[in-house]
Image (cartoon, rainbow, N blue to C red; front, side, top):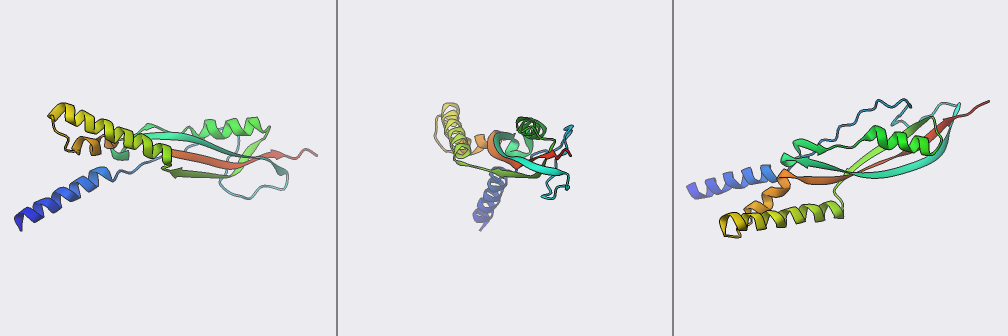
Length: 151
């Protein structure tokens, strides 16, 4: 019974360590109005749509952000590209896509090789811990560019 409780405790600790989280910091200091609302004032019209992707990187199971999303840059670039005065209906989607999975799998394999080089045994422990130190997620920012109607 004692062995089973030690195994369960170890399993819970490992699950907590590999279950990571991620935090994306979104703030805007753009000189252009940016809104997540779909509503636009009567004196504005939609002049373009955008969807841009970037990759965020995290360390320590997502506790610390290594490479954050430059939200201002992404949205402002699209506003300027479309000749707009602002953006509405802005949506942010955070996901782990196939590329992120491949990157994290490669990190796991590299961790396994590192563990083998250090210990001389391939026990898999290092492979499961390396993505804990660096993992990636794809962030997509979508929205509509608006322009003031000049009368």
